[in-house]
Structure formats: structure tokens, C-alpha cells
Length: 378
Image (cartoon, rainbow, N blue to C red; front, side, top):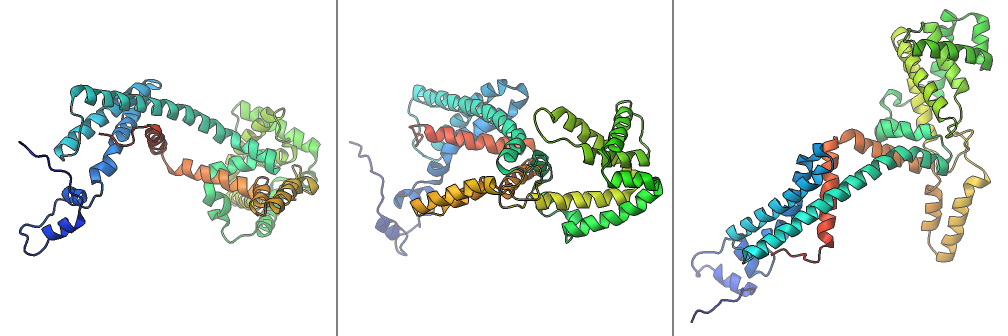
């Protein structure tokens, strides 16, 4: 009669086996874990092998679009097969029949397909949310959507710690730009034209922007004088950011970039001064701790901006908690939304699409595994 030994979990026995007079010491980490009653490395980490296979399979089929769902399923099944083989090689409990092994592989294939499908849906939703964040942030904080779009492009460092404006205040940047503008304007404009620009003459701005737009559409290079007039005209005529004005605002933004490219070549000092000033303005406006006026993002709102903090404070007093007050402040703060937009921009700018996809799919696959009732794979 063959007697089956039960797993040994007595740590005293392990100490006896490793005592000086007990002969050969126990060095196998799996056996030591078993004797100590602890899960082995395979038991702790082997369950993630199918998820890794599903992620690899999904990425391998990423160029196939929806076809990646199938390759993720194949990867999950292959990962489960590899997990079973590795378990047998290490002497770990494994499926005893081909049917049981196939059933677990099919299960991991379904998990892999579900995770990839969810990843594709979440990925598209995240992309739309990233694009829509500036508008949402504007609605809650009052600061223009273009500020948050710039924050997404520049990231945290470029928004709040811009290298080109390091150690320069907004006032200093404005004064430096003004001095350079005086020199440049006197070089390209008559005194009458300089007065029109300084007074934000809408008639002169309309004329300058119209001419520049025609040349831009016809791909005719602008002169330096025309580029300066176009930039200043856009600053004067840029419409409020509403759905109705979106096409016009987009066209004006394109013209500004087109004219700035000319200035960067013809008057680099002036172009650099404008960039420094723009960087300090963006940092200043996205550092406001409370909601600001839509018509003037440099000024915090009055009563309407204080409604959310007041309501949060009242609720906090009733609940004896400061969290509602903090939520009321953060929920309408350009600083909070600016940090969020810049942080997401940093992630997007730092990590390649492949790395972002791997991280996202890994988290989703682990979530799918966590929803499974079979937490300990045999």
C-alpha cells in the first residue's frame, strides 16, 4: 500500500532539517516555501502569464484593428499553455486531463479577447476625453479652452516651469517685449501705423488680417511688416471661444502660426520675446486657485466663482469635513484643470503610443482576471 505524504507546513521541521547535524541543508526555494506554508514564486506570479500573453498578442495584432481582439485571445491561450507547462516543470499542481487544460486555455482566450475589446473601447473614449478636456475645463474654470490645449501640448514642465521664461516674471517679460517692439515697429512702420497698432484699431487689424489670410491661402510669403501686422491683428480680432466661433478662431490661429514663422526668421529677438511673454501669461492664468472671468482670465470671478466653494464649505460644516470645501475650490480652479491637462500632456508626450498601449492593456487584462471567480489557477 502506497502512503501519500501530506504537505509539510511545520516551520520547526524546516529548522530541524537545516540543523548542523541533519545532513544536507534544504536550499530549494519552492520546497522551503512549502515547508513554511508560503506560496511559491510560481503560485504568486504565474497567474499573470496568461495576461502577459494576451497583451503581447493584442499588440502583435495592433495593425489589424478589430483583428487584434483575436490575436489577444490567441495570446491569452498561449500564455495559459505556457503557464501549465512551467508549472509541471516546477512540480506545481497542474490540470490532470487534456479536457481540463483545454478548458482553462479557452477561458484565458476569452479573457484576452474581452480585455482587448475593452481596451479598444476605452482607448477611443480616452482620446475623445483628451480632446474634449479643454472645453470642459473652460466651462468649469472660466479660463479659455486654448490655455488648456496649450497645457496639453507643453506638459507640466513647459506650462508651469517653462525653460525659456525661467526666472522671468510676467511683468518683466512684458516690459522686455515692449522695448523690443518699439525698436522693431519703428523699423517697419510709420508713426501713424504704430498708433493704429498700439490703439488696437479694428479697421487696421481687419485690413491686415484679411490681406494676410489671402496670401496664406495662396501660399504667398508674407513680408516682415505684413507678418507683424497680422499677428497684432489676430490679437485684436481673436473671437471668444464658442462653438459658433470655432471655425473663425481656428483660421486665426493658423494665420498666427504662419506669421510667427516669418517673424522667427526675420526678427528672431522679437519672436523670442513674444514666446517668453506667452509662456509667462499661460503660467499666470493657469495658476489661479479659483474660477476666473471668461472675458478676463486674469481676474477671478466674483460671486459666481464663489458659489461652489461656499456650497462646499456649507456642506463641509454639516458633515464636519473639509473635503467638500476643497472639492468646491478644485472643481472650479484653473490651477487644478491646468495641472490635469498638463499632466496628461506629459504622459502623452513622454510615453510612446506603444508603451501607453502596453500599460493600458496590462491594467485592463489584470482587471479582467480580477473579475474571474477562479483567482487561483490550477
